[in-house]
Length: 295
Image (cartoon, rainbow, N blue to C red; front, side, top):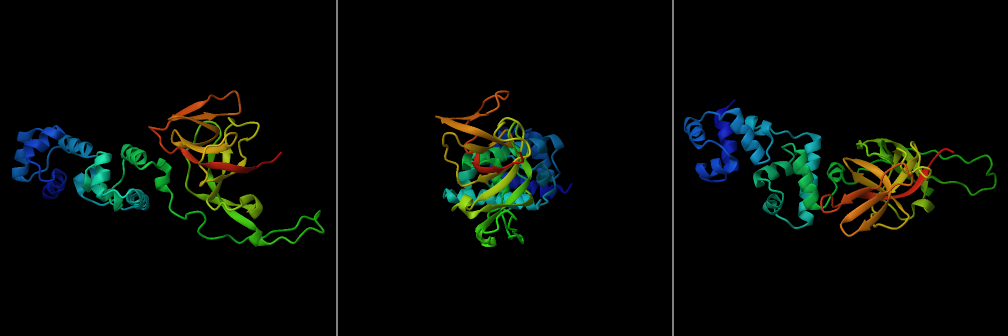
């Protein structure tokens, strides 16, 4: 491994601190690190692991210096920067709040470094956003309107003529909303669902998904398609919401009591779930406004 380059990255994290102070904070052997620094040889692997963990940096970046600018990291970086600027925080402000070195956070925002799961959770809590929101691009649904063909039912001989502009196309995601135990959502579009403008109203931020689970039976069954208004997150009585909980999506009746969000199923065979909002500040994805099902 190129020792000189490793020491340039160690120095970047050191930020002008004396080596004695640096070693004491990180838990490194000062004499060993001093010898490596003077000879410009790489520290041992155990020391490098300690440095990466202390500064919450990616170990591969520390060792190789290579930028991991894949699509996911670039999307995460854009979202982190966007949410930070919405709160008028500087890079140093956010870095201090989440206990991440400012240089590391800058690399995250540029999409050059992988964001660890624990850092993502801290960012989500501090920026008051659900973790999955960092993975969704703005205006991602839908980018293009698919070609639509609308047919008149043979039973509606004298009904008004149907027009394509009377319908809204809503993206149907491949992954399901768990109406029982939450599952992991894949941010992909499987198909499009048509909803008449009278039902959609002025709602714009709509997405559809299939229900998987039995906690909301008999109202919702596994395989039913539900439409979610992602702009409607205000808790109302007797309304069903899509919730991000335990690394997945679930559909439930919702109540809020102080700092607790209570998720109530319809099916008595399923337990009530409770979310502490101080730990998970933004679990509501949106209100479920309708469903399509076979009888």
